[in-house]
Image (cartoon, rainbow, N blue to C red; front, top):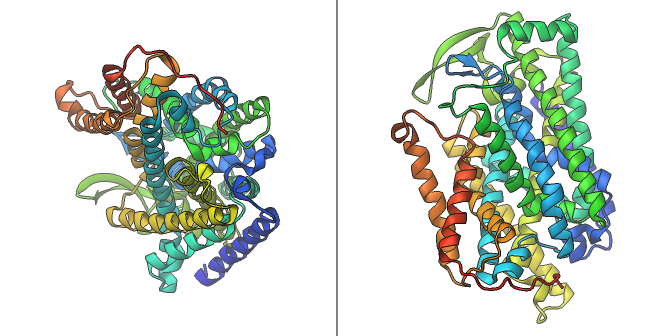
Length: 516
């Protein structure tokens, strides 16, 4: 496939996003940027958030993981264990967290910590969000940029850093003015294109294999690709760990995440925001099933065209990988390898557009949310009476640009580290960075105790991830072969909770007032 022609479609797609941004950002203000003037349509928010929740990581890592070997068996549909946990997590968000956020009329969800515990807890929570979202968003961005680089830009002689910088510049340009109001519409467009591309690729592969959906299921079952539940209690993939971990990952990475909640609280009514979250949960899990089915089809296609599993060395370790005509059809590169090397040019174009559509929602929302959180929570922009509206806007634009530079630096760090399947790394990182947020909010919601307004709160929120890291690294030795997996987030949150309990007192709970 011509890399120049493929890249031209990326440019055309970006121009379309700029048009949407121009249309939606006219007469924009800081409130437009931060919360969309509280006028977002809940159905658009729900549909667009599917793209944000899935991201480019889901687009390539989930299908690629189906044919990965883990402990002598295929991973298969094991990711569904996490997805079942998602359903529990979204229910908690809809009926526990959202009523709290609406009752307090929050612009930043971390203002809850200010009203409940004081400035130190508030700043600590906001800081951990900024760290968490920066790491998670740039990891997702790195994955998709790396795929584009490997299959298109390397062939054009474009350095990786230039590719990353240009894509970040694209995102910066169409989010610069409209913020949340623009993102609600661009996310809807991008989610439509992503899911459409997924379905088209599935249909084409089925037709090329001359299989009906039922026959494909039968072949996947014979290959062992349909396995869902892992019953090895010592394994990181044990089903109870995955379900419980998936629930808390959702609560933390969505319900306690300013990026995700910023879109939810931009809806005028609580009932509509709750509809948004429940709709998102159902559709998201359904789409994840489609991604896993696609993964099974990719490996069936590779096998039907002569692919065989061979022992290869990756990062110094022997692993089994599916090799087709000297190309590794495994992990994050499985989907693009099959589509761009073995399917028609038209399908390749659809894949690239869908991949870009998966990239932008996870990046544009993160950039906007980080700007919002830093301006509101760290700089106190809404309370700055010494600045007029024009000066506040100039400060907000400066922060927005600064985070773009930070994103570029983090992407380059991931490029140096490099990992074959990054989705597991993102879940691990989330366990360390979102754990303190989970502990802080849980302590505020489930107890009436008060915390001293000093930096002992911050110290505990730093110590808990450090202890969690030691436990994770040594669990197999210390606990008779038990491995800590996705439940790391829960462990980290509990350590934070009990640490806060130690420094708390029984003083009367502060009167919470709505944010001005």
